[in-house]
Structure formats: C-alpha cells, structure tokens
Image (cartoon, rainbow, N blue to C red; front, side):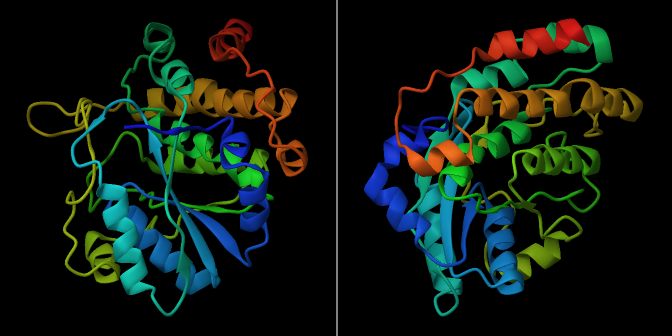
Length: 279
C-alpha cells in the first residue's frame, strides 16, 4: 500500500493544496484505523464543533487485509455526519525509518534495560508522531484519535492509560493537541456512535497482533517495568524526534512558509541511539 512521506507531507501536498486546507474553518485531522477511531471522530465533531475533518491513516509496514478500509470508514463518517461536518478524502502517511527505530532497532537494548519487549509498545506513539508534520503544515490543527484506556477490561499494549498520557504530552510539546474522546468509553458506547459496525470489522490486521498475550489470553505486562520504560524511553524518544524535526525545519513556522522537500531529515537511529547512550 502506497503512502505519502510523513515528514515531507507539505511538499507532497503542494503549496496550492496546503493553502486551500489552511483556509478551511475549524479543521481537525482524524485518525482512521478502525471502529474506535471513526467513533472518536464522530464524538469529537459533536463535542468540539469542528466543521471539516481530514481523515488520515498511517502505514506501519506490518498490516495486511482489505486496503479499502479507510475508504469504508470515510463513507461511514460521511453518512453519519452528513449534516454536521465536511469529511475530506483521506490521506495515507508513513515513515518506515521512524517505525523501525521506535519499535525494532533498539529492542534488545529495551529488553536489557527495562525487562520488556514488544513491537506494539511504541506503535501508537509512531502513528501519532507521523501526523505531527501534517498538523504543523496546517497551522497546528488538533488530531483526533480513538485511544481507549481499556477495551472492556482487556489491555492492549499499544494503548495503556499511562502510554496515552505520555503520547498526549509528546504531541503537546510539538504544539499539537491530541484529542482522545473515547478514553473512558465502553464497547457499547463505541457501538452506539457507529451502529452496525462490530469490533474488529472493516480494519486492517497486523502481523504482530496479540504477540504480548500468553496462551491463556492474559497480557504479559510488568506494570513497574512498563512505567520505567515509558519514562526512560517512550516519552523521551518521542520528544527527541519532535526536537530533531524542529532542528531540520519541519516545525509549524517553516511548514507555513514553504513546501520544500530539501530539508534534511534526522538520522533517527543516531537521535535515539544518542538518547540511550546519554541516559
């Protein structure tokens, strides 16, 4: 599945399209991944009064399944919100190098230091970071996502209470608000927002799904180790990426004035390797 470079999204869209998007009133970026994210957009539109939603999906390189899922979600949003908001055509973003450095490259080091390891740990940090350059290019608009603290008691290692808090702080340090209207919602609450859409349907699947579950379905998670990991790697790594992007000129001020693709991207392995070496 093809995608646009998350870092060079301003160049990919072009100056004319960026100007058109920036001129739209009360715009928000909506994450599109499955039922929860669509429900979150609906909830946020009704609570915050957004006029326009720009749906976005983010490529991880680990997905498989129906590639039309994002289009299906957009169709659902347009049907349910027909009289409330304009839903634009979706964009697909990606940065394989960034996913790799947050979730793969330093796995052995993370295991050695914090005693836990899963490619899911920082996956949602990656997808939220991937939308930051776009949010910057559009003048610092908010991002809506369907994160939930638990899924009716089930833990997802990519979505824990503490990791969602940390992701929110990372985006805040970039000047971007991460809206998570469904954090305390049940599956019944979500279903009421998107009638007829059952959990797990109409979404891409991941090759790493449930890798952190034991045979009995329990989640292999040491809460103390997870907390130390979030403090020692997860949040500092997210902040380091934001700082590196700013140093490379991808921040909001630069994005508003140029769609150049000549900015030099940081070497992510160097940025995070240095962070670990100095910790």
